[in-house]
Length: 522
Image 1: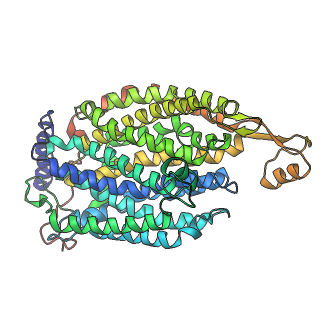
Image 2: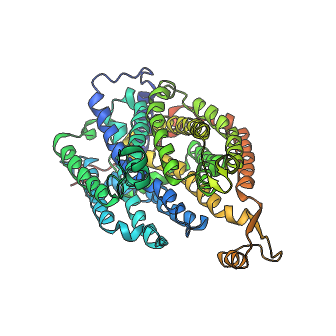
Image 3: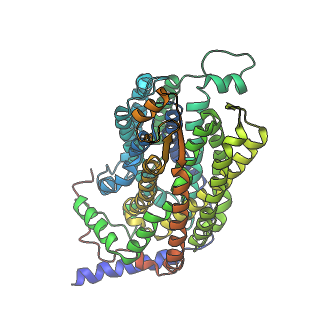
């Protein structure tokens, strides 16, 4: 009984300590840690940039369907499953190396090794003309994403202790800005710098064969970079020993999983979790289907990737601007405003996709006018600003409500719920496009072109599969309506969540803290 009271008192003292943190962050004396976090998140963004560009590369291959795209999206599942091994990351470590470095060093060496493997097999994984081996592609990049997800657990947990407590709100800035830089480098270099057409048009004075680099050599260079940076971090960065702090609690594996269960039992976490799992349904079609529909309409993959690369500059700048508004006590106010605006921005994509064919196609030949690129950039820029504002605000809120004693588990749980909300909705929307689209053969009224075989039969007879109802527009309308319903349900709920006491987010009775004899600490 006395032990239970003592544990509860320690949690209450911890809650008071957290709630008393100054609302005026100051990075003086914390800049080195800030830039280290920025570097680690940038490295995380490199492979994510490569993965994000693959759907565009697949879409440029006429043998790949929307169903294949949905299957490839499965590679992002480790981001939703990482919750299963987050407690292991929090429990197992070598004390002399450091709680986070014990995992960061080997996992980043493995990520470098993954780059070497993909580099040696890239021509088999992504052939130029033949249909890619989708199952093998998914298998390889699923493992890669598993490594990225594990690194994310480590860095998210470290971000709560590497910065001073009053600067913890800047962790979201490091996260979003670093990921944006990594995504920009990863997607731009892997597609544009390897594209013969793009390089001859923009980067060379005289035409030549191939890009300025090959994807194989680029991935090999990334592998070397990961190895080199990891060695430097391992040698020169000393990790803070949090066991010396009064509020530190060390848990073994079973206690970590029990902690995870107890966190799930918190009413505040349950409500927030439902909101995170459903919020992205409102703009899933706009985010994931719209770029592919532009390629269908005739916009080249190089133009799409170049557009996305330009938007990465926005992703770098926006966190620095938005941090002023999200580092305070109520970041979710910004979250709600951006969500509301983004829902109605779906209408801009509906208009864009509808008029694109008539603007860029003349006599069935693609000829894109310059003003179209301006329109395209404007619409996607607003979309990215809103998306990243939502992302930054949510991360700032997660950092504020997470118990730093169990930072990896808390942050991973919240990020997992958020990522799961995005992944399940994107897979569903990509799969449903073909099912919601109705086509009919122009010379055979009984052929609705439901399969590739029926489409080929229509073409062989001299006909064409004409679209009667475009599933994209159906999805966009449904998503927008669902999003409006979500906003009306959760607006006041989320506002209430950010005003409740800090203690409502903490597990008060952590079971039996382990002594220094903890067998999982070496």
